[in-house]
Image 1 (spheres, one colour):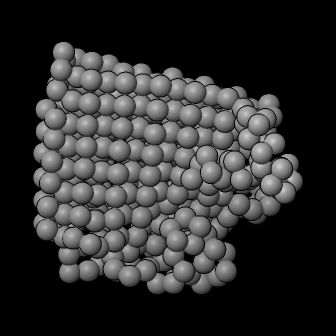
Image 2: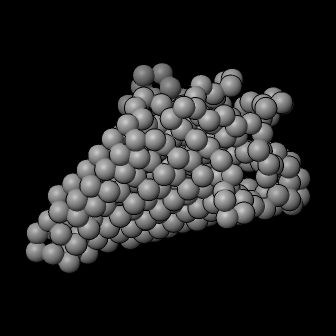
Image 3: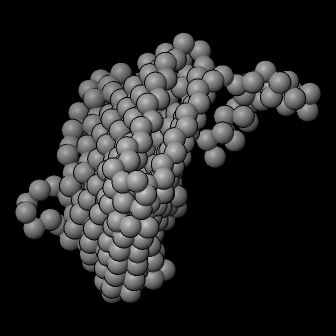
Length: 308
């Protein structure tokens, strides 16, 4: 586990791991298991249906535990589809840290596609973090296509943070969250593209239950000749509240398309959406340059703060 410097650097970038994780974990490397550990309250096992992936079962009442499930690819030519299912019991309060890092120095594409399905029990709280990162000097592409489906039972909540740090040539993200009575979903998305990279994000939050709440906060930076498309949708089927906010900084010759949508199927649904795309304001750069920063440093400071 973590045999090479590349392994260690990738795991630190995508999962903040600097050694063996504490608690439950499953580290996937180059389409195989590179290390696994269950705990008294969190069980990780191979899927019973024979598909590639794992089942994670978290017992009722589990509080204060973290489960790490990062994926790294260090060889060119690997293409995989992984299915991970999470079964979170009632009255839990847990953190789940995923993420995928690709190091590709070859001429063949490296690709990781994954479907994560969450079943979150009554009154449980889940914080889910997923970071994506790519690197390498090869001409082969670094491709990631994550799918996430979440079912929230009564009183349950999920705080989901998805981050694309840098270096992913192509990604298509599909996210769907279905909220029961008094359930809450908060999704924070941060995305950076450059060169000729392409990113598409499709997101739907369905507020089925009375008193359910949903919020989407999407921030992105498009540089070079990259292309981004965002399609967040909020659907209100009962007395509920939903808010969608998309903000993008566009630079160089990039293209950004943002299409937020809200659908109310109940007179008691309260839904709001807003979107903004623009360049870095000149006065912001000037202010930082007067403090001693170079134009490049000032730009980097603004972008880091925007995506923080």
